[in-house]
Length: 235
Image (cartoon, rainbow, N blue to C red; front, side):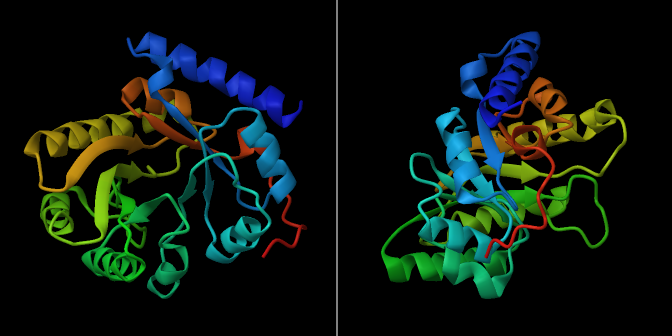
């Protein structure tokens, strides 16, 4: 199957999951996770109708950005966010999805102020409370969002999560449900300078369950591009 075929099949599954949960499929954004896929493959995905492209690695993102890979859709950073790489992606990415500390928020704000822009971000939550994994714990989210709302140059647009790995995608559902409830709770708090637009969760094997639980943004790589081609040197 081609990338276009894959995107159509995913859209069908997204629509089915949305309708099963009483939602409009048009509300849900498809982010193509393009790690280790070249600029031509990314452009094929864009032509097939994905809503955005996400990258995990800063150098790969910058290389492909220079090749014009992302023309036509917003660019998201979805990988582990290293503080020494922040200045390289602020103003390049439309949305940084993996922010999980006040230090990162302050560094993003400082760089954005220097560029005279406002950088949109999502706050990543470690919903499974996994040791050593990125993301703020749920009980610390309220305080972090409050401080983020006071930071110039940064605009929080929602939450992101990567639940623990499970063999059966249905077993992810409790984590997705917990994230959705957290999203609702944070939305009701009405922080200054924060708009809870996006709940980004669900990947190739679990996006249907995530949508049923309330996700309005899913990040899909393998199901769009096929198995990652690690032999390619990209960035």
